[in-house]
Amino acid sequence: LEKYKGIIPAFYACYDEQGEISESRTKELCNYLYKKGVKGLYVGGSSGECIYHSLEERKATLKYVAHQLKGKLTLIAHVGAPSTRDSVILAKYAEELGYDAVSAIPPIYFKFSESSVYKYWTEIMDATTMPFIIYNIPQTTGFDLSLNLFKKLIENEKVIGVKNSSMPVMDIERFKATAGDNFIVFNGPDEQYVSGRIIGADSGIGGTYAVMPELFLMAEKFVSAGDFANARKIQHDINDIIVALCSLNGSLYSTIKEILKQNGVHIGSVRAPLEPVSGDDLNKIASIKALIDN
Ligand code: NAY
Image (tube, rainbow, N blue to C red):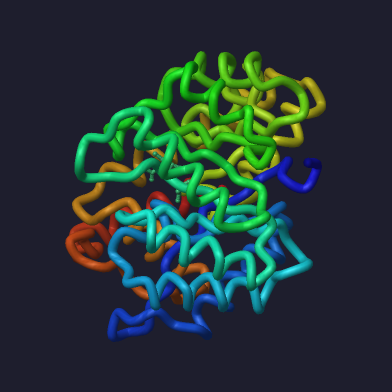
């Protein structure tokens, strides 16, 4: 499971100027992050704007990333989709492309019982021979993974980890204490990377890593060396940046993409209803970029 331990940015949707998925820009972002020294990529999740993409677009992104980085980085495909049928199609495709693991949010829109969610995740797992990573993000899905359902899920040996984005760091501690050493708990909230790691997370997947990989790599270095005072300092810097990133009129992802663009990585904007950056935001973005660069 060592290949899952480290800084794993959530990959962004890369568009051309017309807002269509771009192969060359997807590959450009792959190269950029690879050179930064990250451990892997989480492809097609929240930050990947997956819920706004057709099945064909999601397949295209999965394919471009795999063609660029397979064998170089650990690749996790997020395959959660509104229907079980589409999730299974994506999981099978990720297997064909050679992804290391698949992952999925619970089903969304309707309220589902624990047994329906269990069935949904299990059908995705049954569709391939790949390891599976549960994605718990109650603030967007409305479904909070209970410890009971978690226990039932980890009876299946395909379940190798959970990406936990709920805000209580205690959830990370409980999942880790329940699942034990041979299991990966991924810290979800970037604002709590250091606390998540200290309380039991083995690794991290995050939406803001790609815009400041150096800071997360440094935080990880300090945490693994047991230097918590310095780890805390880095987390403090990270949180100043995240608070600023989340304070603009445009969406978090369009702000991040604008910063990447100023770093020379053009991956377009966001798909509506996510909001692009507005003229007003540009000055503020310059000061956020200065915070990151310092
Ligand atoms: C994914 O699936 O793309 C992610 O890992 C995104 C996780 C992020 N959550 C959301 C709702 O975007 O990393 C977090 C988030 O961007 C960060 O904590 C800042 O709030």
